[in-house]
Amino acid sequence: MKFSNFKIHTYKGYVQNNFLIEADFIRNSLGRDIHDLKLTAVTHCHPDHQGAAVLLRDKYKIPAAAPRDMDLWYSGIGGRLQHLSDTLQSQFMAKQMKQNPKSESLFYKRLLHPDYKLDDRSPLPFFSDWEAVSAPGHTSHNIMFYNKKNGLLYIADTMISSRGKFLPPVPVLFPSAMKETLLKIKILKPEMILFAHSDTPIIPYSDEMIDETIRRINSKDSLFIRFFYLLSKFTGEYRRNKEHR
Ligand SMILES: [Fe+2]
Image (cartoon, rainbow, N blue to C red; front, side, top):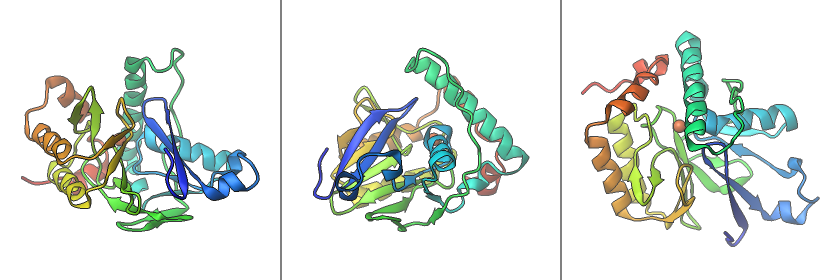
């Protein structure tokens, strides 16, 4: 997809869609060496979103930008357990999706120590036309990335799309915060939504996709889904931010 000053490449990751923003300077400079990658931008700590950033920083010194409090999620004993649980869940999902015939270990260092810590409305380092938008619900620290000029919103795990349906992610640990995040998307009114988990990575925005997702958050979850929720509540950050309703 081509925009005025960058291109977006989408490709299938292990369990998620990956987005690579290619800016003019990459095209016009030294070629396409891995070191031309200026930054990884991480929305939350889950293995399918953070794992590659740790590797790219350790191996190639590519800096990472991430939510300010992200590392708290996997800190402490509860955090360690949560990291183990999330990594095994991702491994299970990858197997279900049969995306990769040979099973690969998804284990990665659980703490990123981001080079750039992002708050709500922080511009992305090197890419100031993109800004972080706080998006709690899935975890307490999720963010999305918004490009106002081109009407693009990368929502990561705020919504999932599958076979034309729009669904909340698993888990939604903070349902009230998640609904507020979804309503925030309605106010931003982007032209296009970039999905991490969808058959089609980029879909034109509509208010209906938000309404449908909120309806599903309000309805009762299946036993299978509730089992996965149980596996997502080990971290101390869940208890600290728990919604009392
Ligand atoms: Fe996630």
